[in-house]
Length: 206
Length: 91
Ligand SMILES: [Zn+2]
Image (cartoon, rainbow over all chains, first blue to last red; front, top):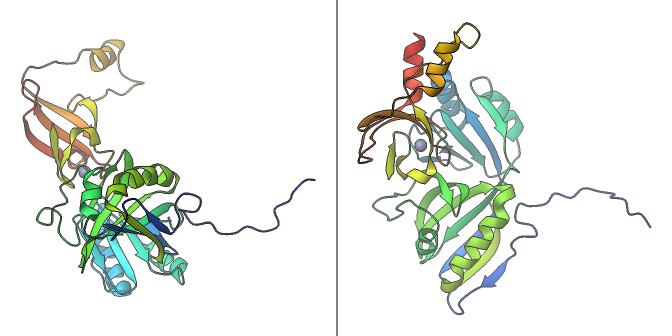
């Protein structure tokens, strides 16, 4: 009998790839991974001569300054992440009102909704840096990669957008965005790399 | 080899792709003589020493860069955004 789809359900970027739970070494987990869901994301690209106007608009609307270097500017509900010269990613905790915000910014920049285009992970725990060291070619030592620093690079041959947030009690906190279609590849690298430290996986709001 | 991207900082060469000499200017394809086009496409210098060349930071900030590299030692003297030169040339 032919089956007919009767409804379309939203499907998170990690669905069918990773699930909450634990893997690897038993005992206290060395690494915590939170699969971030539900955030709004957009690329914002200015022309060199519209950067000033864009900057003023962002400042007025969000109270944030566009970072001119690889840094993240954080607000209570919005983050602006450097994404190349004259390019940024805007991330919001929720998608409510996101379309309106994007249309205001589009007066001064090429704006493109990317909310479902990336898979996002927050990594923390005392061994988070050791896991990343297996796939990231950058020096992530605290003196070389400070809180708020951002990098566009490759992790295990997957293009990645990576930044460091405020430290938690148990160590550093990193967030990493990947092309959604590469989430499976990244996850297989991550599981192999984090196994020896023990990892706890959870879902969370971005 | 590492390239010090003016936007991203020092990165491994595998994050970049190489295009070739930075300075030859492509002749206008419709107006150029066959000789001028042949010269542009095939008759490239192969210097033993400093060479200005185009590199693309594809795994990073997606910028085109002009890298001045000594072809004998891989020592890099200068890395500049190619965009600046293009804007300058147009003016
Ligand atoms: Zn770069």
